[in-house]
Length: 412
Image (cartoon, rainbow, N blue to C red):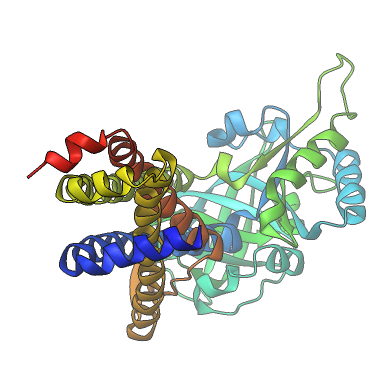
């Protein structure tokens, strides 16, 4: 086998220009794929972090049917204090959970005593909310990064539209589950950027204030946002929580609670899936480049070395040896192209990080993207390139091994 490698390398070196051109083409393909995969993967991870860490959490637990009607923020589908206590006990004992935050969501009318508009309010326990979504405070463009009783954080869209400033008194009016209307005055303590774009209308108040506005003796809970210690364990943690909550049923035997991941709740997940599809097709293009390049070179090598093949066959070289020689040549070109591409791809990613890639996402301006090259992607691309290089060598290798020595020696 060692001798076959020596012969294959000698033949590749003998045709320097063609070998260099093919290896360069493979290298360029590998570089483009690695840079694309690293940038898109890092972009997806960064935006996912922005969404989950600034407003959604990794998981959310709701009462059955709430998410299907979430546009209406139905108060009759809130979790009662007893159900909330069960979930709090479960999450507190679950080792994968880093933090969780109960929320009371409702629609209300927002007035600055001159103009009135609608707003979506989230009643929260500030300390628990900030631990569950640690980037929340980064959305505060003006005012305090804390929230006390009698205070309200409003979206920047509302502040500009109604010309509301920090410290201004405002009134929130809401209808409770019984149909009665109640209002409460608040002081604007913070102005928030939206995590999803200029259309965001979510404001925040203390959950005790929310319960007071809705005339609740004890706060009911619309959802519980959950932050995991390891985001990579999302699927397993979701299945585990669903299994633990499946035992909670109503009188009709139906499940009371349901668990949703951020993927099921955020429209950005569709963009993330598109990125994955684009990455898949880019890898297909790489496979096509390698396949065509290697096959073209090997077919040319067979036709140019017909007499050489006839000579080695005539002196007793077995067809399997001849076939292996050409396959090894393809393997060597694949290895060289993959290694060169890995090195150059890593350098390009390093240069891009030094230069800095900045972009805007919704109201978040100047986000710095740090491209990372996952060793798994590096290994996967290299293995694909080498495997396709070997596969592309098979047909020319089989053709060479089946040549009749006498006919090959007659070839001019």
